[in-house]
Amino acid sequence: MKGYIPEDRIEEIRNRINIVDLVSEYITLKKAGRNYLGSCPFHKEKTPSFTVNAEKQIYHCFGCGEGGNAFSFLMKINNMTFPEAVRHLADKMGIVLPSREFTPEEKSRHDLRESLIRVNQLAAVFFAKTLRTAAGTRGRGYLEKRGIRPDIVDTFRLGYAPEGWRGLRDHLQREKVALKHAEQAGLLVARGDGDGYDRFRGRLMFPIEDINGNVIAFGGRIIGEGEPKYLNSPESALYVKGRHLYGLARAKSAIRKDETLIIVEGYFDLLALWNAGISNVVATLGTALTREQVDLIRRYTGSVAVTFDTDAGGKAALERSMSLFLEKGLKARAVVLPDGKDPDEFVSRHGKDAFLEEIRRSRVLVDYYIDEVIGTGRTLDERRDAWKAALPFIAGIADAVERGQFMRRVAERLGVDETLVRQEVGRLETSQRQPEAPPAPRAASPIDPVELSLIQMMIESPARIPEIDRDNVLACFASGALKSLGESIVEGHRRGQTVRLADFIDRVDNQTVRERLLEATVSAGSPDGALRDRIFDDTVRKIRQRWYKEKQRDLRIRLLRAQEAGDQDLCNRLLDEKERLRHEQKEREG
Image 1: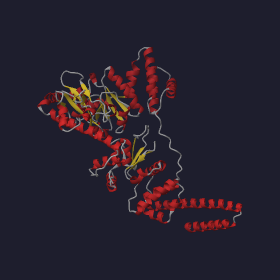
Image 2: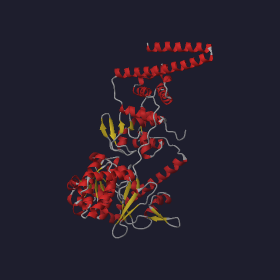
Image 3: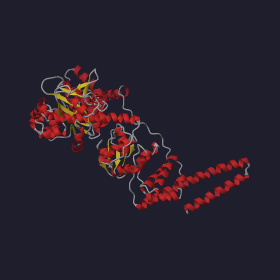
Image 4: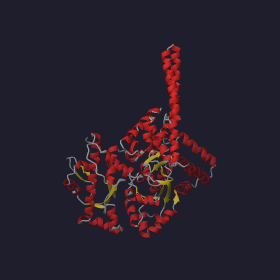
């Protein structure tokens, strides 16, 4: 069947993927007993509740209920279809899958994305090669002047866009690239006659990569005189500047190792730090930090150090970022380098150790705000303005303890009663502040916990499944959803399939069953064999007792109705059935 991915290949991917490694590419996880714990990437939370179980290869968030296996995680976080997630993981592990046909919608989206990635890759190679030729002499000279080592040039795939209007255009045409795709990628500017010319000319080129290392856009710096000094690609189907950070794909490992991310403003600030041996760093892309970028940062660390220009614009940008960091619960520090130097100048002159010392000495953002914003007011009017500005800032602090400490310190600095501060902040929270919608409440579950427990034990102890099958225990289930799930587990066991929750959880249609099963599994301990068998037997007994009780109750009702109707034959048959059930139950409980 066209479009079919063989089940054995999917099984191979399931067996080889490590969900902890996969999830760690997106969020920071820390060992917590048998599990790994981190902040959920799917909803805002103050206390980490996103749990990953390496043994079972599943994840579950106790806050919003999201959960599943490696495939479902990738589908959710990258907005992929199941086949796209399978193929992404297959590529990652070098597993060859047969070609397949896409749906028209998938094909259109996939083809456009692949075309734009290809044209950007071709452009990146073209610019990198040009930098090494005579046409790139000015670019090489500029990099040498800035002291950027060749290995850093290679790591970040730096290049040079030659002078002239058609250098890249003609190269892409020789590579059989449709010029409309080069225009959609922002590499060419369309002309009225349907042709196009190079957007970047005579510039040092910085490829911008997504989190997976695909080139999605470019930044270009003019060499010599000219405006604008920096020119960036326009947004495209691949690139939305507020959703990406320059250098993040290269910095992920260093961020996890150091547990802190350094944020700088420019390409050369980042390159200079890498040049000095500091790699846990990213750069913004010409805009103030956005919520999407802060959410991206939260996947990798809960601690950031922000460098910024000391001019009014730089301070204003930092103040805007403060509220986002505090709202998302990130621990952030404000790095103000001496004499107004930027990271590039500072580290080039004073070196790595001096720069890292400035990071260690930097003030937390709350201290910076109190000292530089609240503390600047000298007159009564200035203090009143500072007080008004501080209210929404305070209300945006996610951590209740930190918010309380901040209110106390602001009250002390301004000479205002702390009770008044708390009242005003509370009033603002209830009347003006628009809180982020909490996760949708989960519907009351009709799922029986005893039946759910038996399903879980069937997964944990597959050797007992034949017993369940032989004694027809699933026929005693009251929950249709759990009965159906149990039957599919039994059927899989009959066919010799390995019973693992990670293998079938994404096929459980009932959301309540899926969430409850994931929650129970990641929370469960590991009792010894004898205790596990006793619990198993007791659970089966409880399910049967309830089933017999319900059957006897139903027979009593039917018998009463038969008596009222004067149907003696039916009464006799029901009495016989009631007696048979009583004997059957007695024999089973033996």
